[in-house]
Image (cartoon, rainbow, N blue to C red; front, side):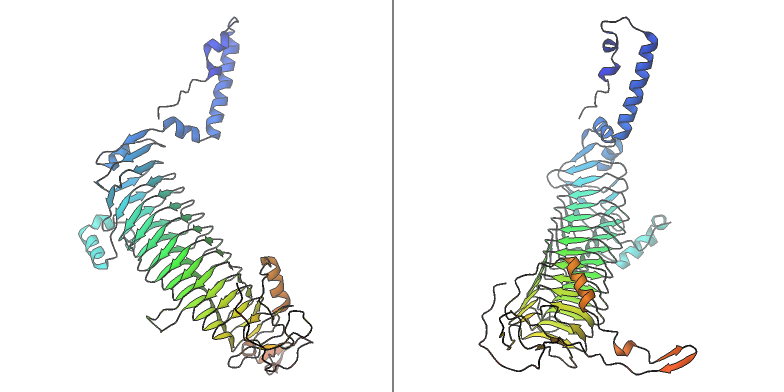
Length: 514
């Protein structure tokens, strides 16, 4: 693009004098005012600088030379063939045409980005895998390369250390890390393939990143590893056949993960010590864990996802979990999800409390829902149909109904007054189970339309058991006197209209259309 013509009409001598006798002082004042106005306009709109300096440069064999000769905002076109690696130290757009190939080396990325405002598209990058011995030998043979450097850096195909970076329509193969970014804002990875890496995408300390329309397969560690970051969006990606994890969000906040396919990984989509994240409309199948939430609290909302056929036999025959909350997860919401043909469709395990499980459909699992060693979780409005065991509770004390309970296909009670609520409670099976659903549904719940705020209110209203007896100290000091007490009973409250459960068996009901 040619440079912009910076001669402005109001600074023209012809325009200033046409039809009048020139007034030298007035003309000088007008020029000064125009110059000030022009400077203010340029300072307020930085895009004008890009337009003014933007050129298109055809790179030859040496991309680095083209970068060195380019100005901010220029476009560099790279043709097909093999090319050397390069560093980008200014805001440029670098476009590969015909699939040019780059090769990373030991501790030498194919592309290193050290400037804000860089866009790269259309490249194929062959990376270098993890090799601890080779890395050690590299630094022993190149001591100057080790001076002042982090020796634990992975071999990355692309390293990003500038904000507002875009990578589009590219492919990365066989790298220890495909794209590595630390403390970067507004990173976008779009329509890019990563295959055979240890980790496809690694983002640490990043804000407002987006990974969209990418395909990440056969990674040994994680397809996408996001840590200590916030406001990330993962949208419409294919995360398939990764040995360990598909997506990991660790110590992250405010992320949105939506419309992804997550298949044939060990851990499909994992949250670890994460909060305020939105997981929506994702499909997880043929993983050991479809959705795994560990030590994560403060309203991670898991909504409208599907966990199907998460049963595999490499470790334990037939084992696989659709949705799992584990290890002290609190104040999360699972709403309108579908779990089908897993070992456990829904699972809440070990120290979890004040979670809301509402409007979900679990069918054809070994366990529709299983709770172990938890307290004060609220489970209502769900449909448990044709599971080997529809609902199971072990060493727990949870709340299974509000004004409505859940639908269980093996419920044998009647509804004599026709209000849609069974006349007798549903006893939750399991060792030491003390829980009942006192308002079991006669028909599947078709609602599922409660919002997050209403569910939080329901948890506050109904999940009111006291602390578990085993965590209450038996001795305490009151006004200087040592008081010894005994553990209080932890029996659940009973609804006034509840009656003893019997085994009146109506005809088995047809499977509902969820």
